[in-house]
Image 1 (cartoon, rainbow, N blue to C red):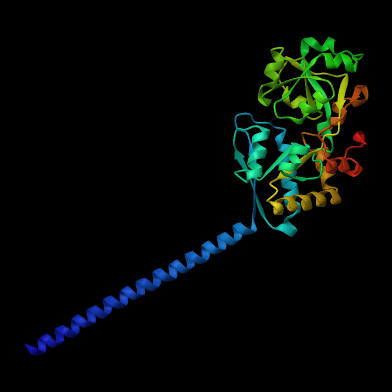
Image 2 (image 1 turned 180 degrees about the horizontal axis):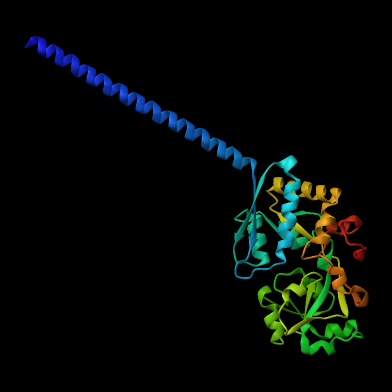
Length: 317
């Protein structure tokens, strides 16, 4: 019996030893797995840190095909900056908000990292501008959408004073509203997405749009036409803007933009993009009477940019 008990104890100790060894192996495997997970997380974090996340706002309720110009241009710029700044992620953020609200979100660094707007002194104080006009000055050449039945009102002989006696429609938070008022125009403001409805309801007489904008906006709408005899002209650079705190992104856009200007890629893009292609011919500029206006909203920095002729269409020199 004593011999049996001794063997039983040895067997028991062996079973305990095997259990301990198995447990230790399992723990080591778990630690080994956790180690690799930790390394993987570090690698993903490092990759994310190396990739600049660039978020921009886009509307789902009011899709605007003209926005493709700015998105495609931003993509071209970010691609051109890879050699210095590395990879990036360009991310659309679907939020329904005005230009003003978008600027607030960019300033706060909440949800949006970059926006594109016609500049003003106050906007440049609020956000960091990249001082290259993204449309070569097109935003400051304004032609009008009018009701088809009113075409006779806008004759080739229309004077500036007669035009000022009519009412122009503009968006609530657009710099153009202040520019036009400064120059003596009667301006009726409304939501950006309701302007054509307001025009149709005779809330105002004409809707000034940047040179590249009106045809896409009234496509397949027989109620409106593009007026063919006058053009409002004022200096109105449109820039990319970032938060003043996001200096890396601002420097990256500046670097990439300079690169595509120097290589000729920006000119190639501008003259062949679907939004801006042949727009000067389509607008029939030689047949238009030009009314030159003053823009009181320009900062000194933006006034200096006006003198860099290589950044503007020859038409605006």
